Structure formats: C-alpha cells, structure tokens
Amino acid sequence: MASLIVICLGATVASRAFDPRRTESAASSRNEKHTTKLVTVASPAEEARKELQGTWRATKAERDGEAAGDVVGHQLSLTGDRFQLRSKDGKPLYAGTVRVDTSAKPAAIDFEHTEGELKGKAWKGIYALDGDTLTICDNAPDMDKGRPAAFEAASGSGYVLITFKRAKP
Image (cartoon, rainbow, N blue to C red; front, side):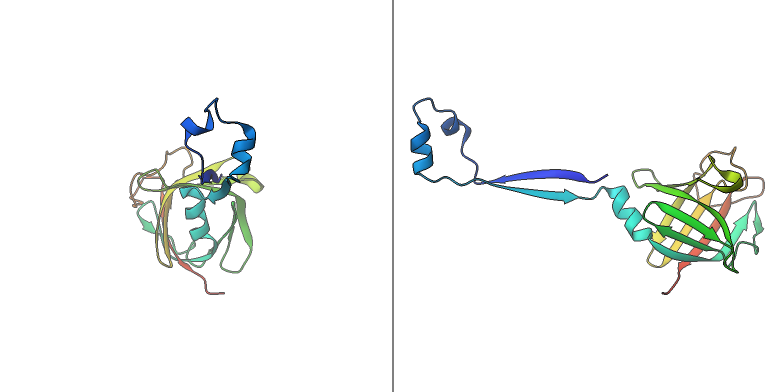
C-alpha cells in the first residue's frame, strides 16, 4: 500500500493564523496563497515487488541436499501481486499471489496458492536479488516446515534453493 505525504508550502505562521485582531478582509487583501502538494511514495515492499516483476528462468536448483534437475528450466512469472510457475515446456504448474517483506532479514517472500491442488496453502521463503539473478529458498518440499533462515537446502531440511535468471523479452 502506498504512503501518502502531504506537503504544505507557503503556510502562515500559527501565531498569525489565529491572531484575533486579524480580520478576514485583511488576510484576503494580502492575497496570501497556500499550495498543497500531494506526493505518493511507494512502500519498500511495493518497490521490491516492482524490481521482481517479469519472467525468471530457473538455472540451478537443490532440494533437501540433492540437485533438483527437474526444477531447472522452470519459469516464474511475477506480474503485480500475482505469480505463475510454468514447467520448462510452458505447462502451468502453480499460480497465486506473491507477497514480499523487505523488513525481514533476509527478505521474505510468500507464494500463496489460489488454484489447483495447493489452493489455500503457501510456500514461505526468503529471497535475494542481485541484478538479473534472483535466489529463492522456500519450504515447497515440506510446507509444514517454517520459513528458512538461510540460503541452503541441506538434506532433510524440507527446503528448496533455486537460482533464477531474468528472462530476456
């Protein structure tokens, strides 16, 4: 949600504004002008989500301490607050909403499923963005596990660690 900041320019000093000796006609005869400017500022989470927009291709993946070659080539598309994950041949696999929390360290990302067999469930993860490289570690293999604290998917962890590269349009 965007924050709204109101900036008043040319405001009258409070003591003059409430001076009982001052008449309305005196104020209007000086033709005092007040300008109000509305500025919309995006929240850090909105800014982060904007940076993540687009299509990402999985280039490396590890699940529970093992290479996860079946994930390599998957495409993650992020549009607004929506996500879609497709197989390497373009078949839709999962879809829903995505939320980020940049105040968490490391930054948190949640994929909430709105359709299919995982409807109503969420993958809870962490992410790091470095230019056109997006790294996500989440609990997709075992949603009973909590959010990972580090970028690792050790044996028995219930986590998957995926490196994505931004797809060129």
